[in-house]
Length: 163
Image (cartoon, rainbow, N blue to C red; front, side):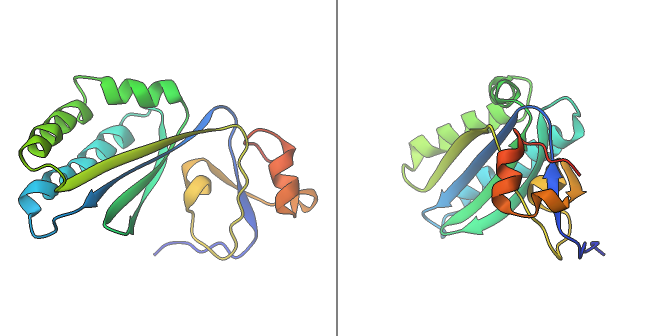
Protein backbone atom coordinates (compact mmCIF):
# COMPACT_ATOMS: atom_id res chain seq x y z
CA UNK A 1 0.00 0.00 0.00
CA UNK A 2 1.19 3.52 -0.80
CA UNK A 3 2.07 5.64 2.21
CA UNK A 4 -0.03 8.77 2.55
CA UNK A 5 1.81 11.68 4.18
CA UNK A 6 -0.74 13.86 6.03
CA UNK A 7 1.71 16.69 6.83
CA UNK A 8 2.58 19.51 4.44
CA UNK A 9 5.65 18.70 2.40
CA UNK A 10 7.52 20.00 -0.60
CA UNK A 11 10.41 18.85 -2.76
CA UNK A 12 14.13 19.52 -2.41
CA UNK A 13 16.52 19.48 -5.36
CA UNK A 14 19.85 21.16 -6.00
CA UNK A 15 21.12 21.54 -9.53
CA UNK A 16 19.63 21.59 -12.99
CA UNK A 17 16.02 20.54 -13.38
CA UNK A 18 14.23 19.76 -16.64
CA UNK A 19 10.57 18.90 -17.07
CA UNK A 20 10.01 16.94 -20.26
CA UNK A 21 6.52 16.12 -21.53
CA UNK A 22 6.16 13.49 -24.23
CA UNK A 23 3.02 12.00 -25.60
CA UNK A 24 1.15 10.56 -28.50
CA UNK A 25 -2.20 11.19 -30.11
CA UNK A 26 -4.12 8.15 -31.25
CA UNK A 27 -5.93 9.53 -34.28
CA UNK A 28 -7.19 6.19 -35.62
CA UNK A 29 -8.05 4.10 -32.55
CA UNK A 30 -9.43 1.33 -34.77
CA UNK A 31 -5.88 0.80 -36.13
CA UNK A 32 -3.87 -0.50 -33.15
CA UNK A 33 -1.38 -1.94 -35.65
CA UNK A 34 -0.35 1.68 -36.31
CA UNK A 35 -0.27 3.12 -32.79
CA UNK A 36 0.29 0.19 -30.42
CA UNK A 37 4.00 -0.25 -31.29
CA UNK A 38 4.69 3.39 -30.35
CA UNK A 39 2.62 2.99 -27.18
CA UNK A 40 4.53 -0.15 -26.16
CA UNK A 41 7.95 1.39 -26.87
CA UNK A 42 7.69 3.95 -24.05
CA UNK A 43 7.69 1.47 -21.12
CA UNK A 44 10.87 -0.13 -22.50
CA UNK A 45 12.56 3.28 -22.69
CA UNK A 46 11.45 4.24 -19.18
CA UNK A 47 12.68 0.92 -17.80
CA UNK A 48 16.04 1.38 -19.52
CA UNK A 49 16.40 4.91 -18.15
CA UNK A 50 15.24 3.95 -14.64
CA UNK A 51 17.77 1.12 -14.43
CA UNK A 52 20.68 3.46 -15.33
CA UNK A 53 21.48 5.68 -12.34
CA UNK A 54 23.53 7.96 -14.61
CA UNK A 55 20.85 8.42 -17.29
CA UNK A 56 19.70 11.76 -15.90
CA UNK A 57 16.07 10.68 -15.49
CA UNK A 58 14.95 11.57 -11.96
CA UNK A 59 11.43 10.22 -12.23
CA UNK A 60 8.25 10.18 -14.29
CA UNK A 61 4.51 9.67 -14.24
CA UNK A 62 2.03 8.64 -16.87
CA UNK A 63 -1.22 10.47 -17.55
CA UNK A 64 -3.95 10.09 -20.15
CA UNK A 65 -5.56 13.07 -21.78
CA UNK A 66 -7.46 13.76 -24.92
CA UNK A 67 -6.45 11.20 -27.52
CA UNK A 68 -3.59 9.45 -25.79
CA UNK A 69 -0.96 9.11 -23.10
CA UNK A 70 1.42 11.76 -21.82
CA UNK A 71 4.53 10.98 -19.81
CA UNK A 72 5.75 13.73 -17.49
CA UNK A 73 9.47 13.24 -16.94
CA UNK A 74 11.88 14.98 -14.58
CA UNK A 75 15.55 15.13 -15.65
CA UNK A 76 18.68 16.49 -14.02
CA UNK A 77 20.19 17.68 -17.30
CA UNK A 78 19.09 18.84 -20.75
CA UNK A 79 22.35 17.40 -22.10
CA UNK A 80 21.55 13.95 -20.68
CA UNK A 81 18.03 14.09 -22.12
CA UNK A 82 19.38 14.91 -25.58
CA UNK A 83 22.18 12.36 -25.25
CA UNK A 84 19.65 9.62 -24.57
CA UNK A 85 17.48 10.71 -27.50
CA UNK A 86 20.40 10.46 -29.90
CA UNK A 87 22.13 7.34 -28.49
CA UNK A 88 22.05 4.69 -31.22
CA UNK A 89 22.57 1.92 -28.63
CA UNK A 90 19.55 2.93 -26.55
CA UNK A 91 15.86 2.02 -26.99
CA UNK A 92 14.80 5.45 -28.28
CA UNK A 93 16.56 5.56 -31.67
CA UNK A 94 15.20 2.26 -33.02
CA UNK A 95 11.72 3.08 -31.69
CA UNK A 96 11.84 6.50 -33.38
CA UNK A 97 13.00 4.98 -36.68
CA UNK A 98 10.23 2.36 -36.55
CA UNK A 99 7.64 5.04 -35.77
CA UNK A 100 8.75 7.12 -38.75
CA UNK A 101 8.61 4.10 -41.05
CA UNK A 102 5.02 3.31 -39.95
CA UNK A 103 4.01 6.98 -40.11
CA UNK A 104 5.07 7.23 -43.77
CA UNK A 105 2.77 4.31 -44.60
CA UNK A 106 -0.26 5.79 -42.77
CA UNK A 107 0.16 9.56 -42.33
CA UNK A 108 -1.92 11.01 -39.52
CA UNK A 109 -2.84 7.71 -37.89
CA UNK A 110 -0.78 8.48 -34.80
CA UNK A 111 1.04 11.58 -33.69
CA UNK A 112 3.89 12.13 -31.27
CA UNK A 113 4.93 15.30 -29.52
CA UNK A 114 7.20 16.59 -26.80
CA UNK A 115 7.89 19.77 -24.85
CA UNK A 116 11.10 20.52 -22.92
CA UNK A 117 11.19 22.97 -20.01
CA UNK A 118 14.49 23.82 -18.29
CA UNK A 119 13.34 25.05 -14.88
CA UNK A 120 15.31 27.62 -12.90
CA UNK A 121 12.88 27.58 -9.94
CA UNK A 122 10.13 25.19 -8.92
CA UNK A 123 7.53 25.28 -6.17
CA UNK A 124 5.53 22.35 -4.84
CA UNK A 125 3.20 21.42 -2.02
CA UNK A 126 1.81 18.02 -1.05
CA UNK A 127 -0.74 17.46 1.72
CA UNK A 128 -2.37 14.10 2.31
CA UNK A 129 -0.75 12.49 -0.74
CA UNK A 130 1.63 9.67 -1.43
CA UNK A 131 5.01 10.57 -2.91
CA UNK A 132 4.33 12.04 -6.35
CA UNK A 133 5.56 14.58 -8.87
CA UNK A 134 8.74 16.46 -8.01
CA UNK A 135 8.75 15.12 -4.46
CA UNK A 136 8.92 11.56 -5.76
CA UNK A 137 11.49 12.41 -8.46
CA UNK A 138 13.72 14.36 -6.07
CA UNK A 139 13.45 14.44 -2.27
CA UNK A 140 10.29 15.02 -0.24
CA UNK A 141 10.83 17.27 2.78
CA UNK A 142 8.57 18.89 5.40
CA UNK A 143 7.54 22.50 4.73
CA UNK A 144 9.35 24.83 7.11
CA UNK A 145 7.17 27.47 8.77
CA UNK A 146 8.95 30.32 6.93
CA UNK A 147 8.11 28.64 3.59
CA UNK A 148 4.42 28.14 4.33
CA UNK A 149 3.27 30.27 1.39
CA UNK A 150 3.78 29.20 -2.21
CA UNK A 151 5.35 32.59 -3.04
CA UNK A 152 7.96 32.07 -0.30
CA UNK A 153 8.84 28.57 -1.51
CA UNK A 154 9.20 29.77 -5.10
CA UNK A 155 11.31 32.81 -4.29
CA UNK A 156 13.65 30.98 -1.90
CA UNK A 157 16.16 29.67 -4.42
CA UNK A 158 16.58 27.62 -7.55
CA UNK A 159 14.86 24.30 -6.85
CA UNK A 160 15.90 23.94 -3.23
CA UNK A 161 13.89 24.44 -0.05
CA UNK A 162 15.26 24.49 3.48
CA UNK A 163 13.58 21.95 5.69
